[in-house]
Image (cartoon, rainbow, N blue to C red; front, side, top):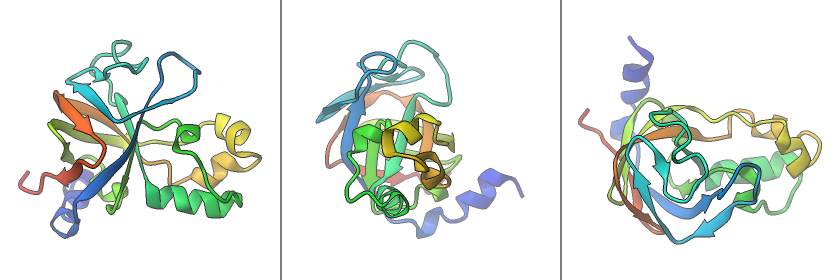
Length: 165
């Protein structure tokens, strides 16, 4: 059984998630900017994010992390509260196990996404979160995704797995 089919068998049991935070990086290594809505551009990325036109058709056009994963990272780092912007992910969702979405398609608002890979932490997380920050994120860094269909996404939109693939 392929990994896509193996993971996909859990889709029927996944609840919908909810979008709580959207962040864009206007240029490389610059602070994230929080926005209430953004246009997701098929094959490119999120409008206004520095990666958008940089690598068309990349599997890392958008990065997602869950609020639940952030709470685990807070526990492992001993930090009371982590601002999502520090983790350098584009979208924060809740209510769904992102690991079960790997290699699957899902909708947020008007856009269609496909999760491509786990989003591993970089060593900069040690600088941002303190010593051991990258280690705290292992397995909890979220997902990378590509955009298959353009559309507007807004805070409060549901993340809906496509269960009929």
